[in-house]
Length: 635
Ligand code: ADP
Ligand code: MG
Image (cartoon, rainbow, N blue to C red; front, side, top):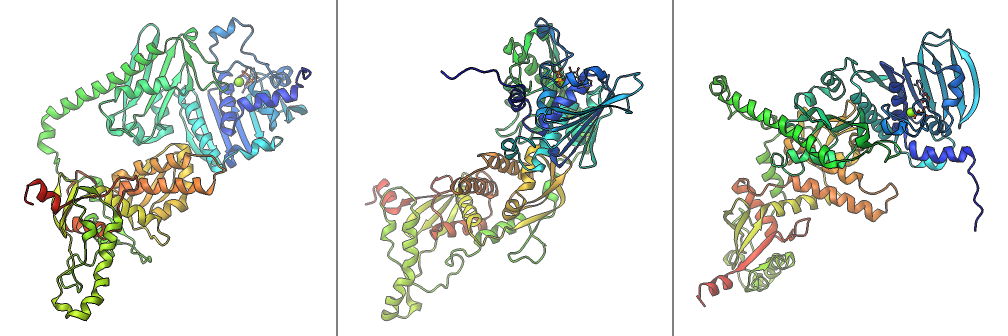
C-alpha cells in the first residue's frame, strides 16, 4: 500500500485554492465579503484585463492589527469563528478562514491595512503564499488588497481561463450580486479605469437596484413580500410584461448572501406559470431571511448554494410573495382600466413602436441601406430565383412525364420526385422540337395556389395532384439553406433606435466575442454598459420584437460544448444556430400571408428546392387526383 503522508502546507493551499479560487470573479467575491465583514460602508473594486493581472479592493472597514496580518493568510485563520458551536449560528458571510490563504497561494499579493485610530498601518507583500516583505506604512484607515498575476504559478489553471472580456463580465456579475446583497454599503466598481457602477449605500434596495441594473429593469419591477415566523421574503419581481428570454436577472439572496438555488428559481417561476409563454422568464431581486439554523451554507466551497432544512417552506414563501405582487399589479391595472382617462384618451390601435420603426435592407453586394417594408422584403426574398413558371405564362416547353408524381396515395413529399419533373420539360423540348413548333406545345405544369388553409398550409394544384405545403417549415428550410450557402449575404434592417438587449454579463461577452458570426447572420451588436448589447442591425426577416429571444438562443447554443471542439461539433453547433435564426425569420404559421408570398413560396417548394424543414419534418404533402377519385368512387 502506498505510504500515507501529510501534504505540505503549500500543496494543501493549492488544493484549497482550486476549490475557492476558480477565476478572478471568485477572488472578488471573497474579498468583497471580507470587506463587508470588516464593517466597511464604502468598498471600491477595481480590475484590469478581466482581473487576471490586477484586482484591487479597498475598504474603510476595521483594518487588521499589525500582529495579525501574517496570520490572516494562514489556512484556517479566521477572526469569525472560535469553536464548532459557532458553526450553527454564524452570521458573517464567510467563516472558513481559507480565502486569503487560497488566493495568496496562486497570486502576488500586496496588502495595506490600518486599524481605526492606529497611528500607522502595515504593508505586507506575498508571492505564491510566501511572505516577501512586511513593513510599516502610512495609509488610510481600512484595508486595501491588491491581487496581481492570478494563477501565475499554476499554468495548468491559467489555460482554463476564458478571454479577458469573459472574465471581466463574470467579475461584473459578481460585483453586482455582492452589491445587491448589501444596499447599506456603497460599492464602486471600476473596469480598466472606467467607473462601471456605483451604488449609493443608502440602505434602499430600490436605489441600489437602479444604480446597478438600470432604469428599464427597475421600471418593470413589482414589490414583493411575505413573511411568517420561519421565512421572510422582501424585494421585487418583474411584471409579466418585463419577462426576459433568459434567467440572467433572477437574483436571490439568503441571509444576505447571493445564492443560486433551483428551489428558489422554481418557486418564482411557478407564480408565472400561466402568465408567460415558454422560453420567457421572470426576473427578481429577492431577499430571503431564514433562521441560521434552518439553512446550511456549507454545501458549496464558494458558498453560492445552500441547503434549506425545509425546502417546501421556503418554496411556498417565495411563490407566495411573487403571487401577491402579481395579484396586486393585476388589481391596480384593472382599476386603471376602469378609470375614465383611459377610455377617453388612449388609442389602442396606434402602431406599436416596433412596427413604426423604419426598416431598411442592405442589397447584396453592399451599397448602403434602402428602406423596404417587411412584406416587400419577404416577397422579394422568397421569389428570388424562384420558379420561372410562376406568373410567366409564355414559357416555352412541353408537358412532361409526371408519372413519378402519381403515387396514387397521400404521400409525404419527396423532393427528388419533383426535381425529376422539373428536369423533364427541357429534356423533352428537344424531342418536341423535332416534331412540332414550340408554340403549339402544351404548357408545363404550373403550380396554382388555390389558397391557404388554417393560416398554415398552402394548398397548391400541381399537375394531377393537390399539394399541401407547410408555409413555415418551407420558408424555414429555404432560409436555413441560404444561411448555409457559402456566398450568403445577409439582408439586414438597420434599426434607427437600437434595441437594447440585457443578456447578463456572460452572454454579453459571448455575443461580442462572436461579432463575426453575428455579422454573417445579419446582426450587429455593440457593448452597452456591463450587461447589455445595443443591437443596431438585425436580419431583415426577423421581427424587431424577436431580437432578444433570437440572440438569447444563439447564446445558449454558443455556450454549449467546451473550448476544444472538433470541427464536426463546431459545424453542428453552427447548424443549430442557423436553424434558430431560420426558424425566427420564417413566416409564422397561424398568421396572414400575402398571395404573392404564398405563390413565391409554393414555386420554390414545387421546384424541388426543399423537401424537409431543418428539423426533419416534411414541408409538403401530396394527394394525387387518383386518390381523390378513389375516395369519391369516381373510378
Ligand atoms: P474568513 O473570512 O473566512 O475569516 P479569510 O481568509 O477570508 O477567512 O480572512 C481571514 C481573516 O482576515 C478574517 O477572519 C479577518 O479577520 C481578516 N480580514 C480579511 N480581510 C479583511 C478586511 N478587508 N478587513 C479586515 N480584516 C480582514
Ligand atoms: Mg473571508
